Amino acid sequence: MGHHQIDKLDEKILKLISENARIPFLEVARGCNVSGAAIHQRIQKLQNIGIIKGSEFILDATKIGYNTCAYMGIFLKDANMFKSVVDELYKIPEVVECHYTTGEYAMFIKIYAKNNKDFLSIIHDKLQPIEGISSTETIISLSEAFKRQAPIISLDVDDDDTGEYEEEIE
Image (cartoon, rainbow, N blue to C red; front, side, top):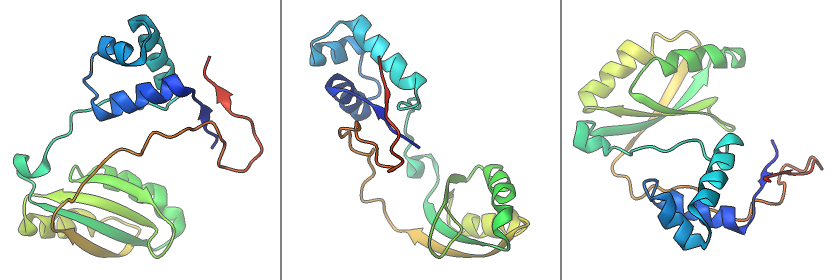
């Protein structure tokens, strides 16, 4: 999984739009000393190669009624059941993240629930019936201290040690 080579202009664009996804392209252009058309083209290329995966409005879960946030480590009966378990987890709207992990758990998920009683219902009615899950371990978040994007750093060096060259943005 190689990285794409990006230049200093791309880095500056990524920093600006990751801080504010609603920033107008003309404001990005002014901040980068280039034309609006150049910004539009660069952002389109960054989207096409998958560096920019989209933009979103971030909802405050507590303000829309989800007062319990939990993380759950999942043990599988068989590692070959990973895909089918992921498919079933995806059907549960309260499961907002799912990661394939190393270490103790086969996967790690993030769940929002209205309250602890609702969380218990999600566990019993939606998670426990999933074929392939052998057991789980839950951590309830008391408060989110902070959340942020990965920092924008120079991505022109391939970190996967395959010796492959980077794909360059033209």
